[in-house]
Image (tube, rainbow, N blue to C red; front, side, top):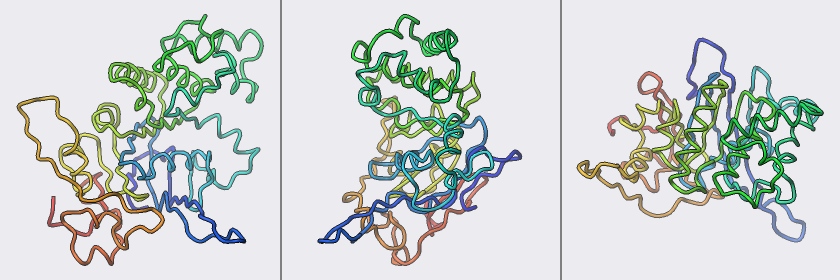
Amino acid sequence: MPGAVVSAAPPLLKVQNLEKYFPIRGGLLSRVVANVKAVNDVSFELAKGEVVGLVGESVSGKTTAGRAILRLIEPTGGQVIFNGTDVTKLNKSDMRDYRRQMQIIFQDPFASLNPRMTVSDIIGEALDIHKLHQGSARTDRIASLLQKVGLRPEHMRRYPHEFSGGQRQRIGIARALAVDPSFIVADEPVSALDVSIQAQVVNLMQDLQEELGLTVLFIAHDLAVVEYICDRIIVMYLGRIMEIASSRELNRNPKHPYTEALLSAAPVPDPTVKRQRIILEGDIPSPINPPSGCVFRTRCRYAIAECANVIPELREVSPGHFKACIRDDVL
């Protein structure tokens, strides 16, 4: 598989040629007149216990890819192989069992919690659906989860509006952990929080990941956060993967022009370090009608005529480092 990082053990998650198109309908008969190509031919793997970052600008398809993997939205094409099973082929009944193993932490800690439910009901809902920890064991389980994420057992009787944004996100994390999943999609879990609270939540997630051996797909904009918490990083642009590398390697030796531009925009917490700022010209093209060839070519300072004719494959340029670019004479 292009762009896959092969390990000795079988990967926990293998995504192959994943696509998600949203149809645009028009006319009297509401026929499909175009498609928003949110995710286009995305392939990668996650090893058990690995934390992988998924980064890119808005409209790059990060969140859509994460939700398509979990089938919160149905993929248009491709495969999502989890523990050897292609979950895109499962019916609703069979998929319910896999949902115990695959959970999500949502971006917005305000919109993701039902304001009419207590914390006990929010966290306990998944336990009820999967018939886990019934009776007094249910209360004990919820209390234990709240303590695990840094809250108190008595908080289970409160409603979401009684908590701060950081506390709400801790409740969201507890809800995701309630059914003992092995894989979690963290969809920009700290982007809506204050900077000081971001650090607390990131450290909490890192501690929980190490304690529980979780496999995590961490979606984010902040490259500094991703570098800190992730083993590898996947860079997306306009629905396609541009680069995959280890966190340290990607931040110190980017191979794709888009990654180079993203890193140049990230602030460095050292006034003595000067970083050349690379300004990307123009806006991201429309996913309804993406550029031919390389989708990044319209904003790339290294683009040549051939870039308009060839869709670059994700290829290995050094051990464990992949990029989707036809040029080897840059970076």
